[in-house]
Length: 196
Ligand SMILES: N[C@@H](CCC(=O)N[C@@H](CS)C(=O)NCC(=O)O)C(=O)O
Image (tube, rainbow, N blue to C red):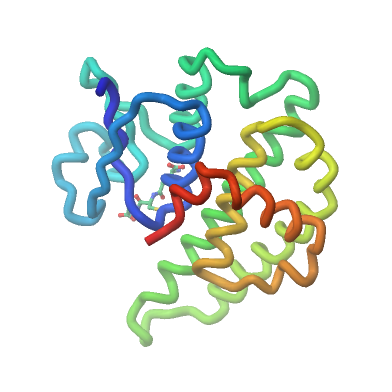
């Protein structure tokens, strides 16, 4: 086994990387860690975040977006970043990653002690998540109308994380995205990477 992926059971960023790794059938050993106590990780990624990928020569690659890019570059498969529609594709990827980031910020705020929580901050993140998912619904033809690409993986993981940590109210508002995500969730890579 040449590469080690330090990961966690509920990270949406980690799930994106794992789905990509499984879809590309890459030989990566996954190690689930508790990132909050993983001091060893500081040497590889001073931000101490999961996912972090360690290469065979000891170098580390961090940030889900960069790890997925790296996987794509070494896979020998059809690229997950097709040239047609390229900047729109990257923008959809950013939007889906943004939904994950907002969901994580919301979650971090919710688990703070009662006296330190800001309901206004939580509501702001929820409004931005809802608005972003409604916007993705308008892009469904772009997202769904092709073979596997990176925007699909990130979108599916962002929506699943929203269901997991926030709510699934978007499914009623966004019937096309709902249908598409249910189909996508049946992929073995999505089944094998469910949180928990
Ligand atoms: N931009 C990073 C974000 C990764 C990230 O935020 N990971 C969280 C878990 S979901 C983490 O490691 N948090 C550690 C901490 O907050 O101490 C990526 O895309 O990989």
